[in-house]
Length: 223
View 1 (cartoon, rainbow, N blue to C red):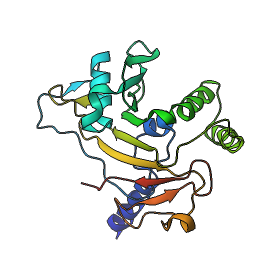
View 2: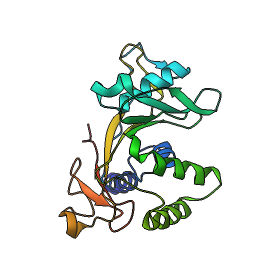
View 3: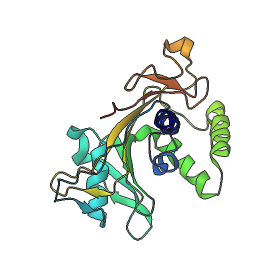
């Protein structure tokens, strides 16, 4: 019986967040509510190496973007020296935010360039020392006033995991998976027909309904 209770308790913890803390603080998207299982490092792959160069940051970040678009994506983020810079120039519709090498775990994101003003505003407010709710409230007012815009249907691709080891031959981060966010400002469960919590893993649901940050969340299947 004690084992069953422990298992239930542990499952409850997992249900509160299925991503690394880095995903939440860097991308500013809250993790899904459903229970998921993080992949364990692949101990059979002897080619895994740490992400310890700007080139590795770029290569692994691009895994967040659709494969056919990776070559022409712009990549921004912190370099190994801790400076927020443009790591790679690009000329298509995507911007990729690289993993922050100074934070635990791995998290990179790809989004449409029209989302950059919204994302940049969040980064600026965070740099000012604003907390999550303050950032939310400020951007809520700025979107309502028309100062900020969030394109309806713009998608955020989040590539995340606990490991910071990757395979240089493929650029895949060990155990990392993709989660998708589709922005639908001010959408609700009633206006979309989607539930406010997932029916099961990989089922879409609407998060932050009725606010500027309303979005459809699609999380990966547990493996």
